[in-house]
Length: 326
Image 1 (spheres, rainbow, N blue to C red):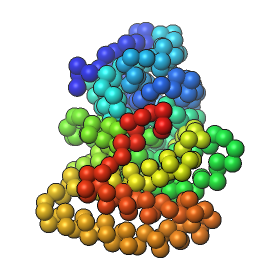
Image 2 (image 1 turned 180 degrees about the vertical axis):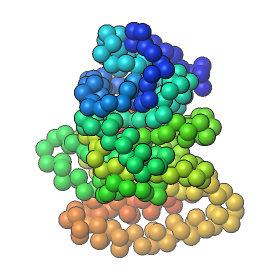
Image 3 (image 1 turned 90 degrees about the horizontal axis):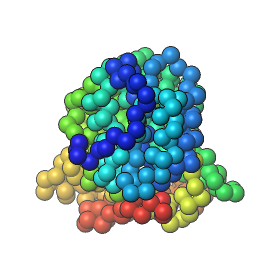
């Protein structure tokens, strides 16, 4: 992995040994929003010493690097910017997490935020406090959508936009890496690459990572108060995108199950489970449509069930392959 990483910018006189918290921030062709995300980090109200690693994942264009360099070169934000030369979100995360482990010996907590998100002012403080209070290894928190365009907030109750949990406390597992804290000991116990790059353009590398963490006995928590606001373009409220996301989510669940249990008998069990979910999905979708008063939202359970079944036959949509459509 090291050959796929180039450090391009480091804050002046950066003392790598003094930071307990390192925030990792992947970016790909969102320079304007990247600056908003970084401003929200600069405005954090916390006594924790933190540094920031920006992972530029466009090795050719480097718009994020160009936009953010001044914040680091002037020392306004402590940390560094690197180029993750391998394309894909898993590759970008891996580059940042590996660099954090290798460069910051005092780091105890690795945090993740995406370049389309704005952190609340107590974001760092709340995540670390929850990890310590609950004595868990990994803490997730809500990503609250801010919809662009008129009237798109009617999809706020769609399952792809709603938080997985409603209360702060221990939870069985997490599903998203867009707003999360991971203790150092987790990364030291999981072999690199941390996220499987086979998921680079499908998505789901984070879910697969959490599944492996749970198998090793690591524990999970949720912090409702450590929210981020996620800018959600109008494209993501179009039916084609919502349909692709539902199919993809179903495919990911099938792929992860297959990786954990890949025998012939297990395949028959997965097929039976997928068939049962497909049979039940019209009733679940009808209930969701009634509860949300939206037939489009209601289709989600059917889309997930179909996606699971298609994945058993190798039909998986790489939703992140064309970033302009995502």
